[in-house]
Length: 384
Image (tube, rainbow, N blue to C red; front, side, top):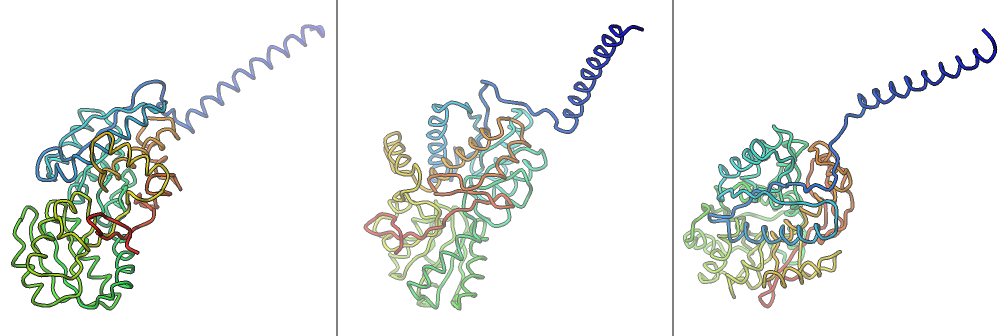
């Protein structure tokens, strides 16, 4: 074989080897890093489960729907990702939330769901999401331990074990209460978990709990419980309840002559307006206040007011943030795959929101600054 033929043969052999080698590398890459569905220009469907009917529609469903709609319009006007909602009504029940999750997952083919609203609903619905490896983000549930259900579930609210210790620390230092009473909704997880955490925290701070009264969600008459509390002359009254019962509790307490501070978790502007003068001086532990100068907060308040003709409340703010956090995760991973979105959410750190810097901890619960507010001149303001 002459030199020219040898050179030609060597070139061909090297070329073939290179092609085979690249092909093999490509296959190995596909095995090591499976292909994840990528976003092009398609819209991404997000499941939404909220109480659009039933006793929680006005207090949770309406403001959360409005907060989500405002965020959706803003996000879609900025470009990618383009989002749309597939909305299911949970009818203000646990059973309705589970049904809605199953429908979105098994009939809608949804990879991520926002909702439901309450801790009782979230505990059961999160189980469905985790079993099906579908991402679920709870905008407003706060009972302890729910994000620990699995690695596909996350929450936007500050949880009971964050809000209550910090809130008691601030209010106890400034008010000096030593003998208190508590009252809670025995049918609701947020309320039962809240009272349990209060008992632990108050005891740790040397505060005596004189009595603990209970009621059931949907009750409207709290006079018997409040009368028993009044007879013990406490320094403060701690209320753990969902929104529908809060105004009545305040009004009946004041009507009975209870002048001591009421401490009511997640008191909203709507609750304050409904209770009127009875709300004056009430305190609350929350994660958001409309007067803060956090990134985009004043624009959010102004846009919400202009769009809906009312002030946003905590639930609207949480829903608004929930969609922005989700959109950030989707944009970061450029994928609609539920596992990829889960991983992107888990890596959210110091993301600028209307709450301030927002992160998820190792269990999927939110991390940002807790706040204590007081009703002063019929408005919720920082307790200072």
